Image 1 (tube, rainbow, N blue to C red):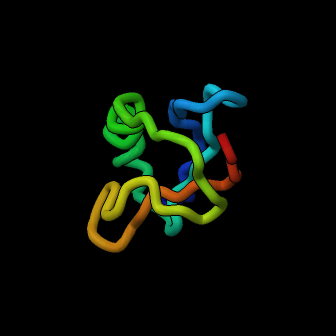
Image 2 (cartoon, rainbow, N blue to C red):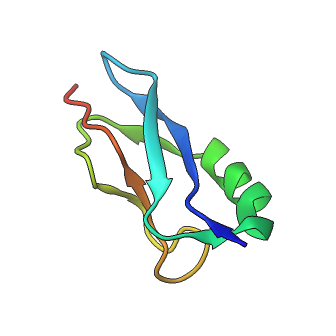
Length: 73
């Protein structure tokens, strides 16, 4: 079974501490635990726009982790 992973990553910002993100394609359910361990280590810096790629080839080639919210500062 495959599903889109939606979660948050840490962000260095004046207005937010967490940034909502999702995978741009479904990932295998069996890869969710490993994906969440990787996400726990990610921290980004503002500014970020909706659709920005946070990490390319996140769980496998061609599946990216993208921002679902804009954070200006």
